[in-house]
Image (spheres, rainbow, N blue to C red):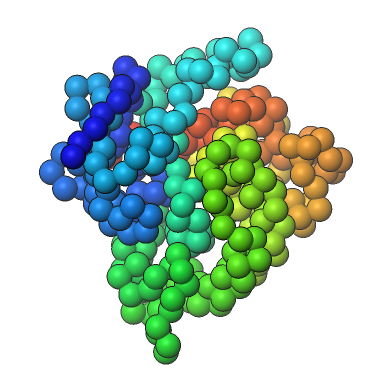
Length: 298
């Protein structure tokens, strides 16, 4: 049975999913996107005459997975005058892109982000994930004995995942489950797990901040990929002495809590946060979309 609710005027489901780490968990069937793994497997999302229609889940789930839980128009008015100007320029260009999140399949989302490092997301990460979820129950960490992940691929990302899976399982066992997807609970969960995630070998701030944004919907965070970095530099938000978030300092300091990180003055992430605050994550999504995917059709 299909149910529907209103979307904003130029919202686009296909574009929103395509720029999210939730994308490998969906398959396009006709005019609908079907979730093929994890929480509410089999649910369907589609757009019909300016509405988001859903089947196989509740409205909250549909809202979060579709990105309609976050309307950027609601937050622009709180920015400074100079920040508003740039934000409104992006709203003119963003083609309905929002932030699709999945706070139910947390381990799976982290694995997707881990596999996305330094590679083409759509050409390599998406096929890896689709192959992986056919042989491993990532969310419950049920890995068949003797499983060789080389069946999925031979890249260093896959080989490193072999080492990381047991560590990741321990981190999530220690943190417990996210039993409520309300904002306060999601924020508390991230604050409790951030340090342990950063301590995992091969994991850096980009992956952990992507987890905060795309799994938990904490839009004050954003992974600083090359598209976001280029955007910040091109718009003079970062100076020529910019630096990327550093694992050593991100472990020690929380710059969103005014802790005295020595890199804060030039850190690309913090400069973005200073400029856009709760819109930081959405701006990163749009920067990625404009930088790489705007001409690619779903």
